Amino acid sequence: MPFVPRELVAAQVVAMLRVLEQLSPGAALRLGVEPFAMLSTFADLEVRLVPEAETGDRAGGSGCSVAGVYIHDAVPPVLGVATSASVGRRAFTVLHEFGHHLQQNQTTLADLLLEQPDDGIALEAGACDAFAAEILLPTSLVDRFIGPRGPTGAHVVDLWQASVASRAASCVRAAQRLSSPGHVVLLEGDGKVSFSASVGLPPIARGSTQGDIGTVREALAGSGRATGRTQLRYRDGIHGDDLYAQVVPMGGYLLLVAVTDGAPWLNFSPSSFTPGPVAPSWVCEHTECGHEFSSFDAQCQGCGRPRCPECQRCQCPPRVREQTCPSCFQRLPAAMFPAGAASCSDCS
Image 1: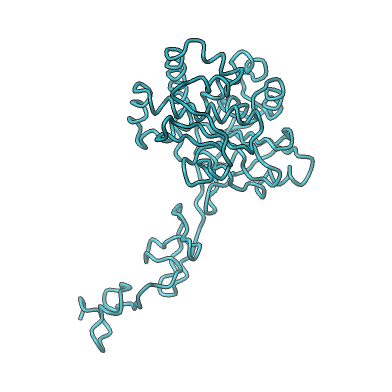
Image 2 (image 1 turned 60 degrees about the horizontal axis):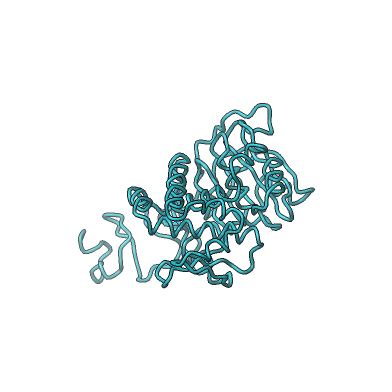
């Protein structure tokens, strides 16, 4: 999913809060105290606890950052929240899903989504997280813990402990205060991503494994704390920017804060020399090709390799028998070679 500028997300959240106030004056304050009870009073919504297997990210759905689902075509629409989540995580999730409901059903909010090159998919998801975090963690509270240099890991943990909000909500609010592009990531005990909030960089997928990279590996092997440089993993061996990273314990999880420069836990942290995500290198294993290349393309599910840009093949065997024409040097189906001819029918 592409990233969107934080200014665009912030503007959408302001618009969402304005619409909410028009629909139900004072609702934002009441949602911050008891979101489930408040949303249950909305006649055009149903709030439902569901098994995690039925939430969007597990059911091949939304790809959202939370274990929840918005069923827009139900009557009335349903905000589904995974039963397995903690109380704090449920509150964040139900507000996130309510954010989908607002954006998809209010014209002033939907119009901005349709102006985006991806039809607003990334903006909608980012605004849902930011909206939920804004409701649960007011600015006055965030200001007490995170200063102008941005958050350290300890700042985020202190913010979470001082509130009734979930770890995920604290991650989102902390990411909003990053002074440079980066990530605030909540990791499970094996290094798997439980939640991630990103600013100015492509987001890290929920469920992706980061346990064997840089500072995360060091933290898992020791006290749960580490500081250094690392590259987070995206998919198929692709790694992101070289980032300054800090890992700290967070109530049974690990919290990773990673930025391109200006890390608040360091006195000096100039911008990284890495220009962006680095594609893995490959060598085509077809002996008649042997082309060396780098590729961001998704790997073939059959052989685990991307398609070679030179011969346009992965490592899977061809579906039809092929041979190389010595005249035009193309790899072609055998049916294109006349009987007994070495060259293809175009060259014969």
